Length: 211
Image (cartoon, rainbow, N blue to C red; front, side, top):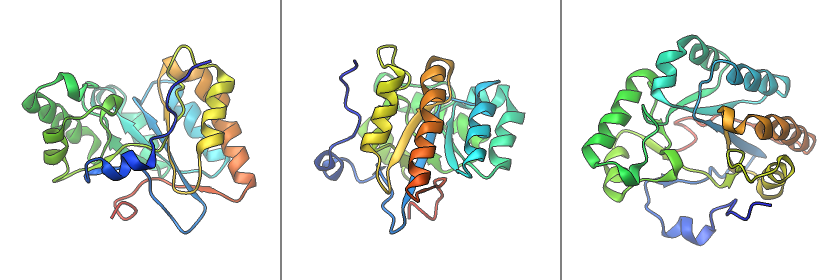
């Protein structure tokens, strides 16, 4: 069993930099599903089919180099009404990258993603990186992490993570990547079924929702 933080404590969110968006409170029963690291040549289409079966919208934070490699899949994501966000061009770790290099990598992804939405890989961002990026990006983090990518997370633990901690307004992270495939495909339809039965809807993140 993996012991890792699934949620970000509320006090930390309040004390964190004002540029960071952790959740999107709503008067409606609404959940914001997000998928990092895609698009991938086969897995993305499986995700899209599951979402369509539950009339669910989501946000895909895509790596720019993957968009370059798989433009048709990116078009399919957008064509089905989902949001596309920037996840840097080469999945850069902000803590390990200089300011100029990081901003250039984000800008390279902007060319392909064409979106204000931005999520730093690993959630790792330096203060000055965040300050400058926030001028023309909405920096989206998360309130619930599935941990689907971690080798020590079981399928059952992944499902428990997202079922137990999600509430209205939660921003939930899954991964559109082979390393997460088995756990994500096990958890996603069960997650959608569970909350659909309770009357929740699943929405893409839009500029209107973050402002």
